[in-house]
Image (cartoon, rainbow, N blue to C red; front, side):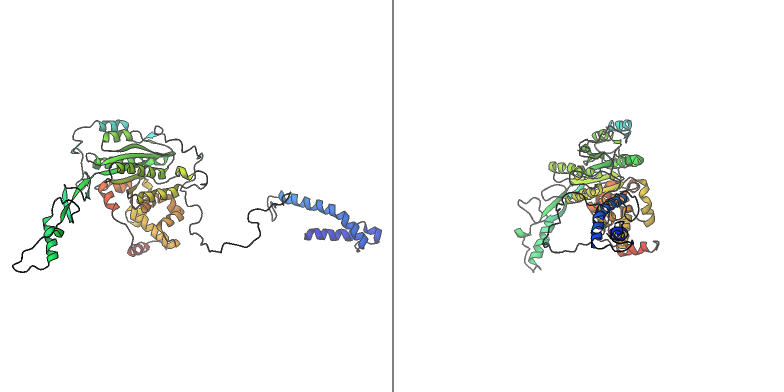
Length: 477
């Protein structure tokens, strides 16, 4: 506007029309001359302004590059333009500590749409994970399979189920005593006498101990409950360099499970989802047939593998509510495919890690034990640097970073730190699901793999202040 005003003033003083009213240019022409000059300047000014706006819109750089203009036509009100008073009181919103995208580990692959999840993963495509001929030769082995005598079992291997107290069983090993409920089965005489003495107090001379009905105690027995292991195997293309680790891990678990009453199921995930290749069974010939179908190819839908494992365990609990479930995941824990329901309308964000946390929380809610085995051999740097087992090393690294960045939770720290989000997938699942994560080398060096998984699921790993001080002493300042 200032520029137009300047041009208008120059025009009024030096217009050729001024020669009709005054003899010299640069002199104010008077009222009549001012009116004539203004009428002639209006179309000239309009053309000048339009030319200037067109020139500014075409500029690629500079202070006024890409300047917007008002669209022609009648202006209509938009949401938020209404006049009125604010009806919602002001509330302060704290800025989240996690900035940017916190859901992806890798870049989303191309071609993911509603039809992507309709297709089932193709198990016939890719490189074989196991040698089919070797599996066939194992399946033909019949001698001493039922007793497990031909297998080199470890002394500490659980082998034939886990002890579980039962209030109704009347056989097995007596573990404790209890107050009878309903019909009395087997009376625990020592516990009954102790209860009577506790009730009667100090015995007087000449008086006998009387046992009343409320003193009777019954034996509580325990039986061995078979373990139901659901082995979730990552057969995506990212596992191609870890195929040897997967084969050795499965063979090691076979040595402890085969020949017992424990059941094992196989779930494989790649491409668009997960498939239950073999339902939990004690027949290892069927397990060998399922393992021979595994092929390496495709993407990594890790969250779908967890959800499929939980569905398999729910079906097993419908058959036998007293089963001992255990989910063992073998993967490199780099998901790049979310759950199918997370890519529909209204879910624009790519959320494989968010869905992974969701699935792990459901696993914990169902009370399912979980062990996450990282088959990526390059993930042992934290173990060497912090001089601790894999799970403890990652937990300690998370706590140190949490203290440095000012986070309040381990999961928040993993999601907020990019390098943790990309490499701490195994610890993230174990932390949320209440399980434990391992490196494949650690598992292969264990005396009893299944025994370690069961023991770890009942214990908590938590770092104390002394651990932080010990590590901070040799960390670079």
